[in-house]
Picture 1 (cartoon, rainbow, N blue to C red):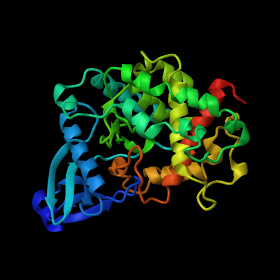
Picture 2 (picture 1 turned 30 degrees about the vertical axis):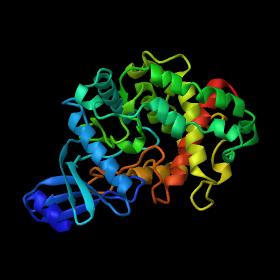
Picture 3 (picture 1 turned 90 degrees about the vertical axis):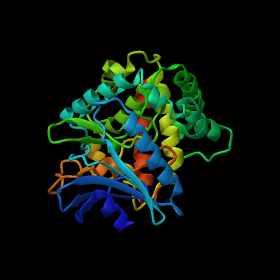
Length: 366
């Protein structure tokens, strides 16, 4: 496989910087050749990681058909050799947004996503011809879990008693997502998280990991992106309401999405790990007000730092290593993806708790 990649690159590889972000077991690295060419390469072993190979192939097809000019990595090539499948993409110089959210980082990401969302309202025919999934069906199949918990088909995730008392409300809210998604025009990224965004040295946001593009509303992406910022002294309600992607959203679209995502993340996270999770007294009660100074200043040395590490971002208040994190966020994760990373459960629990806190504050549950 190395020989095949070297031949495709046209010159020997002199530097390989492995991407440490992402939650799957595929190979991901920025390769630099003796000729000075830099390419981000993802690869999966077909016998053991066929699903990853399929994701990479789907992403390559999507990236090749996205409208020109969008801040996304462009595909260069694909190859199948020695039992492996590999794709080459543009290597992006940049870093993931830091936690807690820096106002300048947040503004750049929201501006960039407005550009992407506008381009996907009326997508090219070549893109929709790929037979993209529909968020409404993905929600029924993989995202909505509170109804399963209420029916006894799924264990109740680790929640405080007050949150368990709100199970009927959570079921009712999440159940509206398929209908809202089916009625919305355009396409959604489908997996827009902090770790799927890069900020280049000029401050422009770039959006990665496009293997879950689907028919659905841009406001779903927007809510999923913002949940990591709850408690960071950022008015997320205002950020969501003012964003062009939410212009045509139903009045309760944000609550519906937060209910669905907190159920998905918390159920998928499994029991909290004592080794990976912050101590119970390090976080306010789920649904309680964030502490003075912001939630992530409390969680920054624990769950938020774990998420930052998984996304390739420095810890809160820290600095990136020399050279930054080129293409760090271009690992392949996705809805329902079960990767080998020890941080995957931490990422899911942190995101789920953030979504639940934000929802509870909006609903006035506590």
